[in-house]
Length: 268
Image 1 (cartoon, helix red, strand yellow):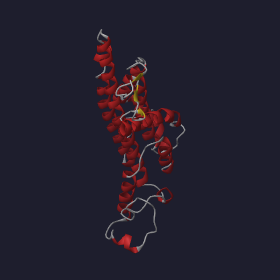
Image 2 (tube, rainbow, N blue to C red; image 1 turned 135 degrees about the horizontal axis):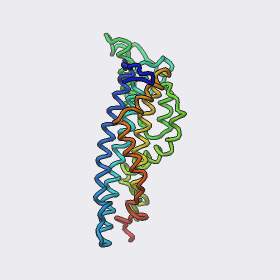
Image 3 (cartoon, rainbow, N blue to C red; image 1 turned 90 degrees about the vertical axis):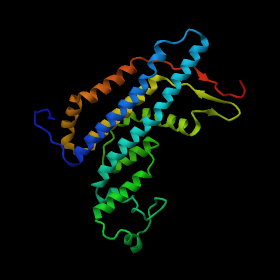
Image 4 (spheres, rainbow, N blue to C red; image 1 turned 180 degrees about the horizontal axis):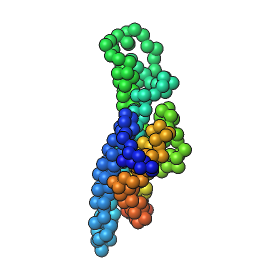
């Protein structure tokens, strides 16, 4: 790969690992994109009967709901790995809120005594830092952009170009929470409804997640490498093909079902 001056860039250390994260995210997004395309037959050939149309719309809705859990997982996995790499090499200030591995079952900060250090005899300081970072991140929830922004700021990543995406990410995260914890139900048990879900919203969430991971991977690099990395991303055919496909889907807004489905309502 080359920068804008034609100089070959040979990624080393964290830069190489950040490129691996982008590549992994691309593979995950292709999986979600394949699932998204499975609604196409339903959209292009809706049955003629009212009952058939309703069944097709419900099938589309459930396929779309199935996107959101792995989509959030892709966001969480990508951000967690970027933050992990940065914390491994972070100055002590960034590590001040991370508990020593194994010192607190609840993952809370506590005063460290010799008995805590005795568990780690023979380990290097770098190994102890990595294990502490890993335990901390494995317990960390990426359940809001407020949490995400706090973690990114902790490792020195500038948020200026990411903030414009936070409203969209929060909408996706909120819907994922509703699906996972309430089966996408709204209302009480005596009378509940399933809200509609729009393919265009899901397309927008997919594009936003992918763009955010790519942008964060760039911002995690040293400032002097970021311009060259943007050029590489612009020239990467695989990345641009995914982005192009997601943007094309956004140009075709479709409603999966009209209004709200009263499926299962006990008072219908």
